[in-house]
Length: 304
Length: 249
Image (cartoon, rainbow over all chains, first blue to last red; front, side, top):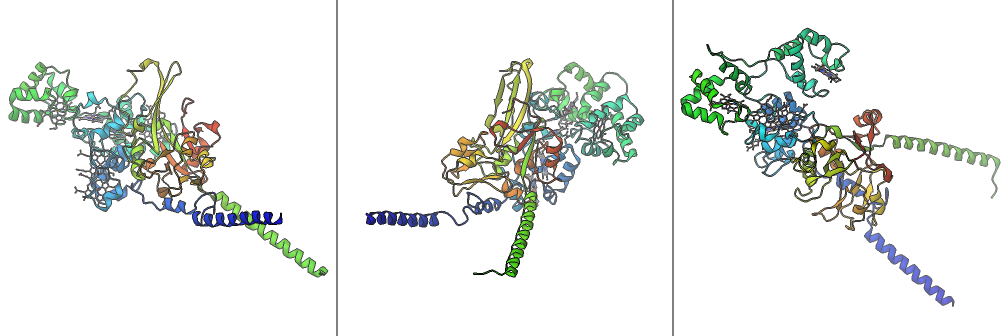
């Protein structure tokens, strides 16, 4: 009787010791230090190497000063370099840190069409604050960078640059209302600059504190430029109609349409130029589809 | 053994001093408790443009294969129509951005009341149901509130994947364990922002420590109306949404 009890107890003790030894071997030392898990795993996660440069975009500026400056002044300044250069592209995609370690081995991608349309293709679900285009109408094919500087796309490349420091507006005002330039321009066409200034620098404007960091004179110059902004063009003497079309339609993209035309006439000849302007080869053709061949003929005749 | 009165008083005073010191120490620790970090994310639905940059950045940063249909973070598109039907789609998690528009084709344009994008990720819950169901203790919550998976310890049973009410966990096709968003633990511990936050072009994602009064997220939680996904589960999610309508689940 007693013997049996002893035996059972012995078996239990042996089992207990056996299980304890197994547990000691299998379960790591730091298990259960701070909870029911392996404590050193936190360190293992912590010690992984970051791959994206992230918010330290200044690192890119050490080698790419020009691009950084353009970007910093432009409307895309809120967008990390890597959003455009590491994520999209048909080549291998490399996060910034790899590029830093060996720039020519790990090239960053610089695709533009697919990239721009990720953010700018017209979609119902997309909030209205971001400007959107219907790609088939706006630029049916080719790169977006023929006409836009990706680092500062606000105005297409071909037309004249602003004289005043327009980046003050894009950098300081845009966080509160997107598209400030165009709102300001619309307003400047209606009201005189003094009354706009009065409003902006008064407490009635919720952005007062930000606006007051800009010199009033500077702001005045910007507003005046916006109100007068029209593309300069050497007027063609005599005749009507033509000037208007060139000014209103072609100059949206070209600042020197006439010399372009003359140049093209020399290279392509009369019919060649006509064909070119209307064909898909001309990047601007989508915006001038409504101008008839006859009208263009008149223009060419005049310019010639 | 006999205790003299003197000795008794001595002992009493030593014991009371000891208790006093202990209570002080406790208080100091309690203060440290308050200084503890609690990482959270705030997502502003009004700002998301559905470009999918976060989805790719996350995969690159955390070595989740780009072409595998598993995501640590993903973007959903919601379309709510007049008859209160809700259409939700997430084409490849939004990794290729949303280009096609179902509105005007399958869904009539005039029927649409509202439509928007919702970025999603692991909610790093205060009471994570995934941690409760793990049979081996391979998933846990750190002191700063991030839920992690121990890749060496996970046996790949998949209970946690089932248990998550948000579908935020998946089976990692390469490592062959359960996997999920870590808030980029290796970045945030070095003072960097999570990958998805750094690449977002419109600052729709904001990351921070909600215990720190100087942090942006602290101020947002204090001043703005924020919601969480599926509050009824009792998981207490720590990813907060601004501008979320009731259709979002």
